[in-house]
Image 1 (tube, rainbow, N blue to C red):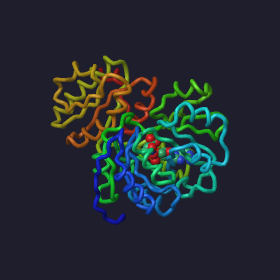
Image 2 (image 1 turned 30 degrees about the vertical axis):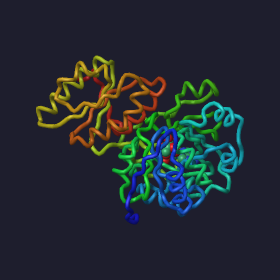
Image 3 (image 1 turned 120 degrees about the horizontal axis):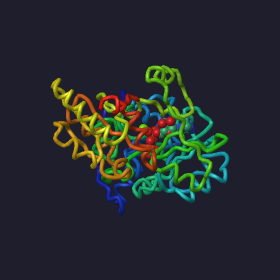
Image 4 (image 1 turned 90 degrees about the vertical axis):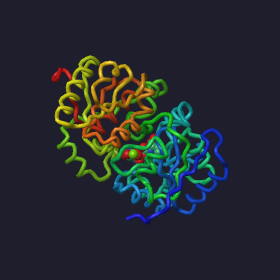
Length: 365
Ligand code: TXA
Ligand code: MG
């Protein structure tokens, strides 16, 4: 059990990070403590990446298995060169196009990287975040920062400081609060150690954008095994290729279902299901787009609107899941998104949040 700490939240202006607050956070990190900090994707739970004992505290605080490796966050290309043994041309091209930003590269790890970070793999995940507070913190600390999302293991990732506080209160001394994260889903993880660059986790940078620079980037392999079989396979896995890519990784605490089909079918099926749950006296949460509201506004459900575009939906997705979870509903119904642009990442997270429980709306309509 992690030692109990008084958790303090300090507001830091995103565009003009206050030096004293950054220096305070950096000195905690240098001393081997944990600090929660904002990135453009989600809030991270940071530790000095070069101190194994500090990194170990991340796993303790999150309740995360040691077999799940971490991303090292850097602020300049010199740090990248220290963390890896070789830098393929692709890495330079991608860094030039997308760093700082929501892209994580998997590269061969140098001996400088602790095993606690890589989970014993020969590769390391590296990302240069674009958030000014994250950059200032990495620079002030003077070492790369290892950071997973700042949530308890298997819970929804945090896109506000309050989300991180709800999960990690008492387990971390300091949370830097710069308001909501603008991207809202985690970085895209691209494996540069396989024959063809392959996305391991879709995220804040789209497949289309990556292909503009590297036309041969492969989409993520689909996990379409039945849920039970999938869980069995996951239980066995120690350090698999993308160990965090487990189906139930981003789940809220209550059952959720993903409705797929045409927009009309989805709305009709959702309405029908809400009425059925209401007849049983159950509270229902709906995670829908603005355009669905007309059909569903009188349905006596708790409604969280994801906005009009995939960008907006990505930014609001995790807050929506947490809000509905906290509203006391017994079930959450989510609408599906198409896989263009950020839609690929949204769909991936919804599949995980629902544990792969997909409802084909036409079967209910
Ligand atoms: O946007 C993000 O990436 C956020 C912010 C804080 O930067 N971080 C994040 O970290 O999402 P985390 O730990 O929640 O997810 C990182 C994933 C892990 O699930 C792990 O599977 C994968 O990165 N990973 C790390 N090192 C890897 C490696 N060497 N090979 C394959 N996958 C790796
Ligand atoms: Mg995570």
